[in-house]
Length: 72
Image 1 (spheres, rainbow, N blue to C red):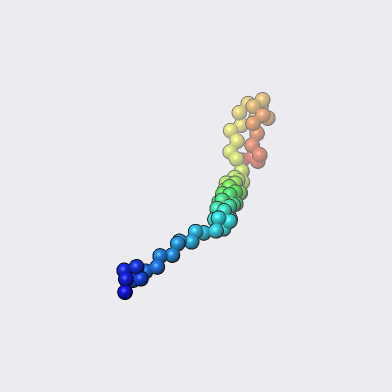
Image 2 (image 1 turned 45 degrees about the horizontal axis):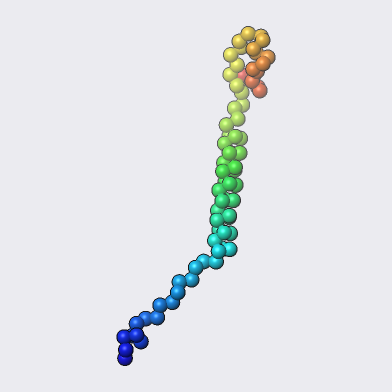
C-alpha cells in the first residue's frame, strides 16, 4: 500500500450555477422593493388624520392654506 493510494480522493468543489445566483439576487431585490413600497402604502393609509386642527388666521392666508377637512 502506497501513500498515494491511502490518501482520500479530493473532488473539485462545485460552484453554484451563475444563473441561479442571479435569479436569487434579483428575487431578493424585488422582494425588498415590493416590501418597502407596501410599507410606505401602509404607513400612508394609517397616518391619514380624520380631521385637522385649523388655527383660523386671517382670511387671505386661510384660503391659501386650508386643511383638507376642517377640525372636528
